[in-house]
Image (cartoon, rainbow, N blue to C red; front, side, top):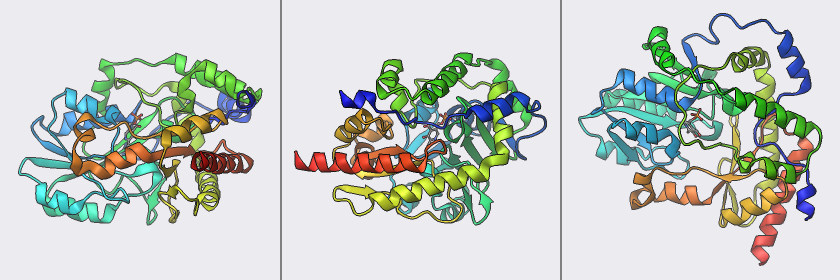
Length: 374
Ligand SMILES: Cc1ncc(COP(=O)(O)O)c(C=O)c1O
């Protein structure tokens, strides 16, 4: 019963009361968020819109096998030709496999920068140029990451960002793209203008619950999804970013350096604590310059047990991803299926204090010890 009284660690960043007050005072956002960026609500629809606008249905797009089905289901449903490619242990594309399997109808390659860590963009650019295919960068986890001082997502033909994954907003995504006009995106958004105000009410309730030191029990009662670091949705149609999320995105822009520094610091502390633990492997032990981590990926042997024991201690942890059906039973994707069954994500976001990071580390260590001794 003790676990029910633990204070729960939020799975995503929360607004502080100070930020809420300064938001009320902030002027209405005007102008562009960043040059060549078009704003909308989520990344999966941003990618779908871009593909609908720039490719024919029969044009093949190469998508990594280590990917969430949330992203691929809308593409499969519209009949897009997709080939999944295998990934290596560091989540880089298996270039040799791609080299041998690329076909004449191959028109685009989607490269994912997982968990805030840049994938091998230099090689990807060379590969795309050599094969005359379009390089698309999925930066859903990594909009604050830079490679050699250049913003990730600006190396290929288009980059897709999920602002809502790193900031305290329930929706917000961006397409970096020089060829698609604002009017084109507008046209898609005009067809669907659903803004879920309920999401905002839920967020504000969470801020209050957190500030009131409500224990894990309350979070459990509210919803199971509060343990999800990467929330999964059945389907989210494309829609506009809500005015409130837009305001936060614009005002938060002045604090991006602090967000990066906080996340990096949390990540480094956790990496120090969790390296060299028997039965656990830190997927990315090093933080290169420019990296803004999204979450902390850890490979373990019995993830379901870890997740249940960690959740009971108030630590949101989850497995990722739920793979597309075409990938799940194919042995060439063994690396992806192995990671999907063993990788757990831990939170390191900007609402988490140093004290809480040590609490997470202690919870992982005690869970590890418990699992190894039973
Ligand atoms: C790699 C990757 N790309 C894209 C998406 C879709 O992001 P959004 O939730 O903004 O639609 C996700 C969602 O989890 C993801 O993990």
